[in-house]
Length: 135
Image (cartoon, rainbow, N blue to C red; front, side):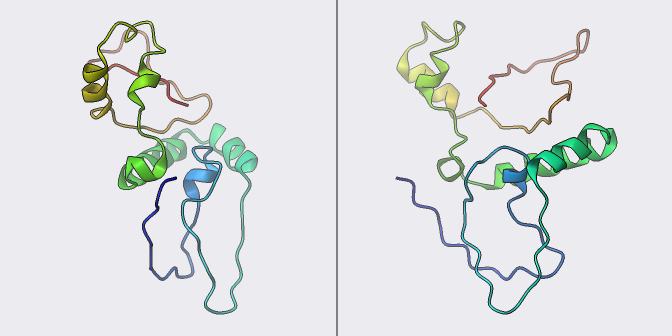
């Protein structure tokens, strides 16, 4: 099992929690949050969040950028979003690569966040990255 580091920080009014869960990247919370005093918490469902993002292109881009930055702050071994080298082998492209090469490659992938309907690759655009659909 993965050991998640203890986060001891104060969350104030105006803070958000579980943003990446709401976006559909995680199904379980990565940390425990306890109230130290009486508080009011408003919540937003994943379905409502994603529905609102579908019609808000500029906001969706800002949220995707924020989520990507947030995702990169979480150690891969904690988030579970690191690429297992053996999962790469499922791709026909990587099927014949040696285990050592797959391990080295898996250390260099970066994660980005995309919402439903977002164009990941546009025909005709220049590109120098390879994409692996992890989830």
